[in-house]
Image (cartoon, rainbow, N blue to C red):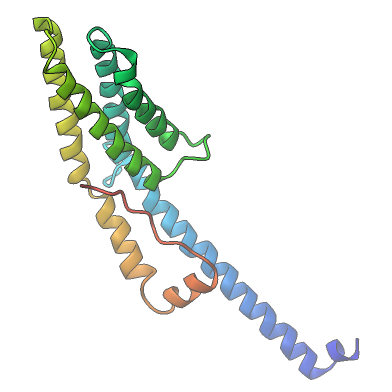
Length: 190
């Protein structure tokens, strides 16, 4: 108890309090900035609402509609992978699930596009009605349009800018590592 009443004890307590407030403040500030950047994934890089998350949701809708049309021509086993990738992407976009993250959304989207393409390729060998053939061509065009929209969305630039210009510079790089601040998650674009 004597130690805390001494000049040295007071100096140690003061230094510890200052260090703790620097670390906690840095963590809080850097995390808040990262969260602002990652929110652009959902609201749009220009806050217009045209976001990667919106494009993913639209792609999910197209894939569900593709399943409906394909279900008329293909057996359920041929559609299981596409159904699974739809569920996976849906979970990655749902904040109420443990799978909710930008990285998981990217991996799920990649899988969904591959599975949708496989189903459309399988449908080429089927005798589709003219209306269903139009639907399938429309689905393919819509998926390509969503892929282009995602490719040119400014979110990844903003995430990279945060990672390089804010979190990558001194003293934020040191404080970020000490307080376990992770980088803004980029959306994998192929």
